[in-house]
Length: 157
Image 1 (cartoon, rainbow, N blue to C red):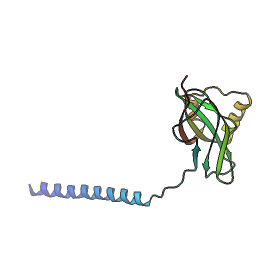
Image 2: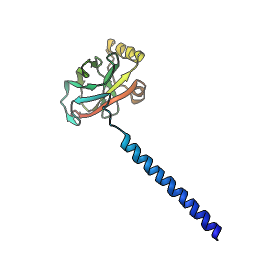
Image 3: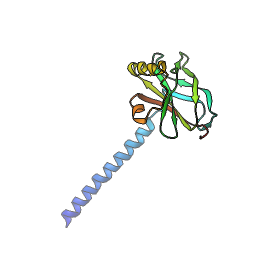
């Protein structure tokens, strides 16, 4: 009985120590984490903006090399993505713009994607061919890293 009690107490002590270490480690990590600015943000249009169908622009800030390729896409209420052209202009003053967004009905999000040179070339060829049709989610995921999203709403059809 004493032996069982001793083993139980020892095991309880180890569990308590493990829990304490986990809590302290979590506390230290939370204290050590410094919030860094996002490497790309969309500042206009504002989150949840209600926008009319038609032309608009988008702008924001970035911490990217000026030779990075960033494209904007519009996501509709049905999960389709639509390429917007031209690609984002990354300026040296750490701001960016894209002045040619074409909003249709049922648009729910603007998505900024960083792409590699090959995908940039492929997207540029799509533009040259006038291929602005719906891109499915699986294809979209292969383009590159999503840098930022902003929810918007255009009128439903």
